[in-house]
Image (tube, rainbow, N blue to C red; front, side, top):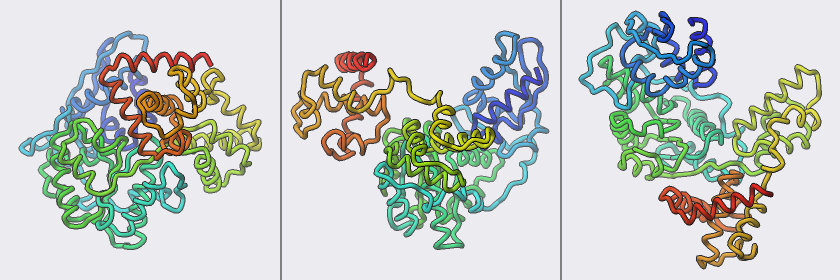
Amino acid sequence: MEEHWHSTLDELRQKLSAESFVTWLEPLRFDSFDGKRVRVRIPNRFYADWIRTHYLELILDALRSRSSEGELEIDWEVDTSLEAHTDQPGGSSGRERSSSAPPAASAPPSRPSGPPSATNLNPKYRFENFVVGPSNQLAHAAAIAAASSPGTRYNPLFIYGGVGLGKTHLVNAVGHRILQDQPQARILYVSAERFTNEFIWALQNHRINEFRDRYRNQCDALLMDDIQFLASREQTQEEFFHTFNALYHSDKQIVVSSDVYPQQIGKMEERLVSRFQWGMVADVQAPELDTRVAIVKKKAEQEGIAMSNEVANFLAQTVKTNVRELEGTLLRLAVKAELMKRPIDIEFAKEALRTQLPKQDAAISVDDVQRAVCEYFNIKLADLKSHRRHRSLAHPRMIAMYLCRQRLHTSYTELGERFGGKDHTTVISAVRKIESRIDSEDAELRQSIDAIEHKLARR
């Protein structure tokens, strides 16, 4: 079983962020196995609470897939000698410890008392290698403006969008541009998860004043990824609220990213949501085809990968919704070509990516969705794309936009163009209205969407 435990950790190391794995799973130690229960030693009881909430199912699933013992359970045994192996001991089970919490059982590990250095910024994520297109031009322009005049324009800057679309790239680029103009600037780039972990660690070890000094006084720009991680963490939100105020009133730049619009972050305090909207809120959408082609070419140039325009177009048409996945696909293709001693031509690309190609019966387009909606509601395609706002047209139009986003992940900007040259904010509003009605269990709407989905499935 010990061998299974180590291979399970190896698997999770690949699935989790390096920060999460090092902080919460690396300090764990296998102890024993009695045929059903796996006993694991942990630095303190807070690890058990945090892991039970966030990682237990992942651990058990990976263990069960390797073991023939049937149902397994995990028992935790506190071993304070493991504190020395932790980066930031402590955790939470949906709540944080109060400031009166007792210190950890052993002396805290050594750690820097000052702010993380600028080397925390990813050296590859700069404005110079960010590919700009209609899907991200607003966020890109806002990020440049914020970086050029930190603390005065677009403060705070809130960037939101789906996974792998370039939010982290822009957040890092802001830090690099500030340092380029002000080499002595103190940049703090952290994830919201790390902010939470550091806050909990500071509470455990009675170092909260040091924590506050680092984030509020020794910081010229705070760049934070995945702010939605603070949702439901009331005490951490309270701490971030006061940190935000201290920085804002000192004209220090604040940039945060999220996977959703501020008001859509569940269990986030209203006063924080309000502050996120004080400055500039900009979205990053899935890139259009031309932008995806440019991204492939830029990445190939950076990595020294020889590739034709035909292959670049093929990759951009194969991976449509995620920039990170698109770049990863290119790199995997290059590695495979090198191992097989083959040039990256179109035949090789199609052969290597065969499993990623959409099935013929699933390969629908915006035109297919529009036609299916028109057939269902018995309206003309020209009317669907028109600017007429009568409900008999506006309702089908919103459904068509919603289905294009859900099934094809088409960007809001592209949808606006495909529906008669409408502004992307009109499309966003339409999609959200349909989502809201679905959430409210509108049976008639659900029936219409199901019928149209059925039509599309038969194409």
